[in-house]
Length: 312
Image (cartoon, rainbow, N blue to C red; front, side, top):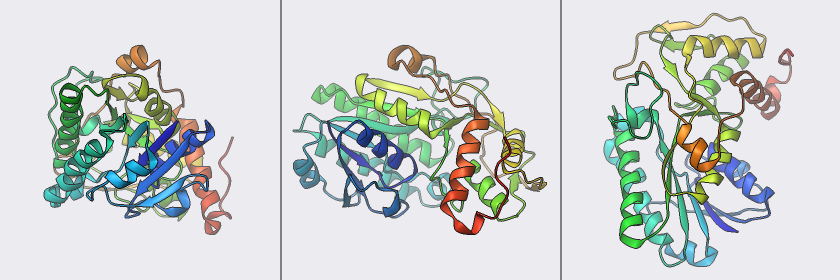
């Protein structure tokens, strides 16, 4: 298969690229490298440095992709609050550019959306039928992208898919970034620093390992509609930190700061529709996933090699 992966130099996107290459697919990576890294892109993939807000027809005409995995995005909730115009420019107009470029090539698009940011506060595992009540511009822009996906399916008789990811974590996530609490916790532990927890730490999230997310993303080619990609299990921030410091073998107490305005207290996704329609279910335990992330972090930085290995 010929495929384009937008955001393919980033955290999730680079893992999707690796999975496609492992199948023997011809892969073009479209990334402006603003947050992604050239080092994440496998040598067998073709890297095209381009911003999704620019015209993309020439890239699609050259690659003639049968599939486009659209993962390029502005993914920081706090940035979306501070700069909602920029958030919409990337996540809404950029998605329209991708959809327009896909026309004429028979390209099926799998769009990376978000679950927690779209559903808002959850009383239990949220199904795809739940009311969508985003708390931040990021969730609104992703929801808008989903609506464009659905509209293209109606208007142009395409079969594009939206996947609502839970809180994705795993190797290659930036420990110095603004998103990804697992990577941030492990990055602080690796440097011998006490991580910061906002609020009382009892807020819960649905943490899903990147390897499981990649499997769901590839399975998205065989379906149409919107699907949750999560575990269906809640883990509090305090519980997550306990796993992180156990895996790291470093018993550092966290610091606490006041809760941030608008932060959700409970976010968890119901994965049953994906199980029925995509044949997908998350498999990695949070303990094994955090361990793999920690070991990857140590391997990526020579300065951290002297730290103790993760206990068995």
